Length: 114
Image (cartoon, rainbow, N blue to C red):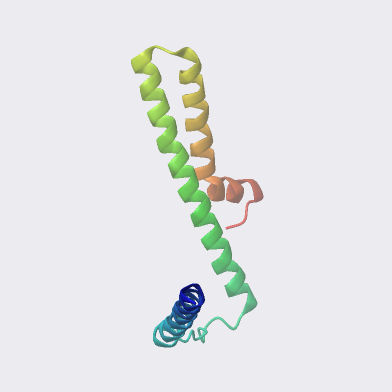
């Protein structure tokens, strides 16, 4: 008889936990829900595309700066340990970071568009 009561109370506590969790999520969603209003100036499709392009190039620039920093670290470590293969990898990473960092300017120079 006690085993059935224990199972029943265990199921009951699981149900209570599930219902409380669902209620807590609902309360958080209702309290923290913030409406998003579209900008009135973004009616032109080209403005949206230009903003997206600027955002993507900013992400690419951030990745390039990270690679640039990692290349500097690799070159410094290779000079400390006198490892020529690590030094060449460091310089390649450094060059790649510079190219990625200035990708937008390079594309502008190639295409000739402002």
